[in-house]
Amino acid sequence: MGVQPAELILWEDETLVVVNKPAGLLSLPDGYDPAKPHLRSVLESETGRLWIVHRLDRETSGVLVLARTPAAHRELNLQLDRGEFEKVYLAILSGQPGWSSLRLELPLKVDGDRRHRTVPDPLGGKPARTDFQVLACHSDYAWAEAILHTGRTHQIRAHAAALGHPLLGDRLYAHGMDVEHPTIERLGLHALQLSFFHPIHKERLVFTAPYPADLASLFSPSTLQDVLSQSNVPWTVQ
Image (cartoon, rainbow, N blue to C red; front, side, top):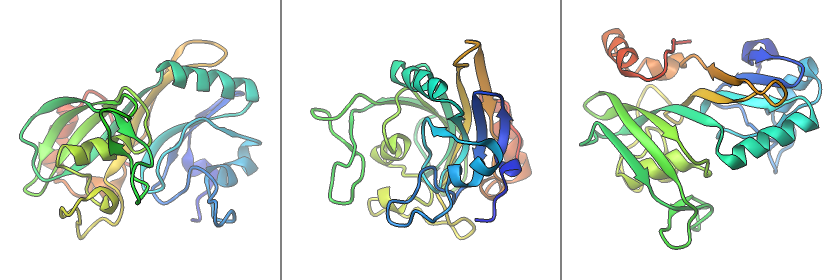
């Protein structure tokens, strides 16, 4: 991807870099092809050395924080462990949910089957909680806000599939359902807002990433206005 650092950076200081990761860019180096572009390889020519704090799937866009010092990296990882990160996503669910809001507490096991998926496992899984709120519906899909209270790998994808509404474009978790759409070729998931404590100054920081135009194009301008009015997070389209 021909991405320039200035196109990604939302905010930075001496300890942190907050970015809006585009879909298609890896968060971490590829284990089979280390030459593939990833966040650090794109950013470090501009920012200097960076440490990965958390990740987004390759086909997920949105806000993500990286540390510029080992001390900041340690502190942010402690916040993650304590559940002090707050994450809000916009997710496009296939089908039409029969509910307007729902809290799902369903333990998940990472790498739980032969396809290396995260799977529900009430006995052997780790606790996982996601709050869903439907913001708008189309005949074949729905736009929802998803708030993560835990950070299991593929948590939103696995929970959405368990509800019978896998994310649009999510072939891995489709379970035989039609998740295709002719105008988008990636996962219908965007990390909208991220909040955490600054590792040095300790104030609460809140960052919001503009919603990508490719996903926004699935809805009419009037529907977008309806969604904006119902969302808990103020946001704009990129």
